[in-house]
Image (cartoon, rainbow, N blue to C red; front, side, top):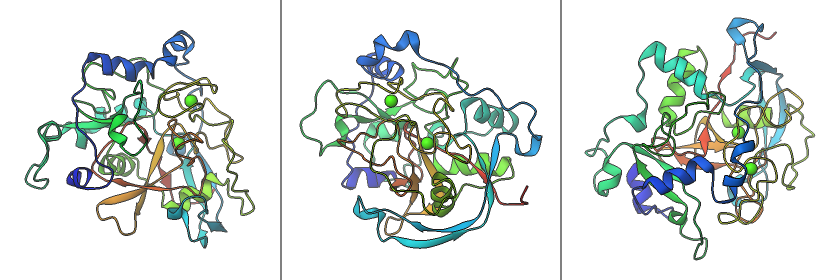
Length: 323
Ligand SMILES: [Ca+2]
Ligand SMILES: [Ca+2]
């Protein structure tokens, strides 16, 4: 599937990162450097005292709603969807949670494994090395058609080193894990006895189980998105020039944090007409009114299942007993 990135319209020019690029990621860009001292490393306290089996989860009651939206073509058509009730992680899965999984199982993520060059013939040399796609804030861009101006495949980037080999997650235990392929998210969920949400389950939860929830196109205040001109001016009016720790913004009415913004989130669903992809939901800290107005429950995008990126994480659900 990685070859699609080469052949497809979302072509990535593959540039290995130097140390300067890695620093950019850690700081989140030029404007971020002045915010670095104030950066919060944790917001939501660990959910001590909750029932161990479902610590950190909330119940999402079932219901019927109008799924989709009408802002971008891929969100249509509006259609009726019905979901049963389920438990859902109240936050994106954190680095600490994913580390516990890896410590317990020895699991090695897709971006850490050797690249299967037989399954992916024709990859350029950089993509034949294990790695992930990393956002690098450019100083300037020439039009918005070429996303390689801000997205680069970085050998050595993975969940432990999300910006590349010279970066780490030390001190970022309460940040959401990123640089995770779909298979990795599923493996974590299975280890917990859970699954990834379907697109309908995710969207219903993002609407706070309210069939009358408005499909607002206003940039939300209570979400980590991008204020300014993407990708060159990051005003960080929401307090975060980069990824935020989980739970820094107000939760929705169900108590779910960061459904919108911070990181996009994997769902279990295949994206129609795009083999090898899955639907991702919620938009990320990179979504701006000027470029990617996808900080809405009905927004969606396809993502290559085996290509990890650093604006994408996940959360899990459990479909068993009601409370
Ligand atoms: Ca932000
Ligand atoms: Ca999110």
